[in-house]
Image (cartoon, rainbow, N blue to C red):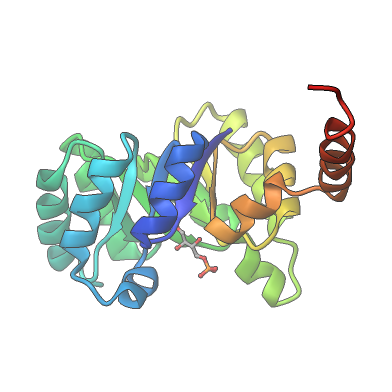
Length: 214
Ligand code: E4P
């Protein structure tokens, strides 16, 4: 499973990249707004840090606006993936991008039928939001299992990108279900590395190391 980092914070991206665990980056308008910087400037810098797919979202909600932005994003860097919302206009834009060889990440997916439509439209990635489904008392990971099965049933090439990840169990479940990608906030990446037995074991090794004659 590929790991993308879900952030527009350049320090977090640099730190995660230095750990060697990052295959790509996803951003969205809310994450970029937190940075206080222009979206284009942020994406350009990310492209210099990570050599992998970088999702940059359109801000328009109509087809013409989305396509104008998609064409602009595609010119920024070969690794930019255009993030489009799962709406009727977004699906039309997905189809048009696919026809022009522009990679897409169809976002805000909350149902298997939406994922099926995105695959038929030629999406490169589909982003089901597991955490937001959990928030409304649905099981986000059930949706991942359904989409993986449906895509396998029909040999769709669209990659399942698990989004809205809130904790380490989402990540291990995504891997067990065979998702292609998990996009993970920096805080959760840190949590993945943590284990109390690692900490106590290391403390004991450090203590015993002092007893070794030098
Ligand atoms: C990533 O592509 C999504 O925009 C992001 O994972 C959404 O996460 P959230 O539900 O925590 O805002």
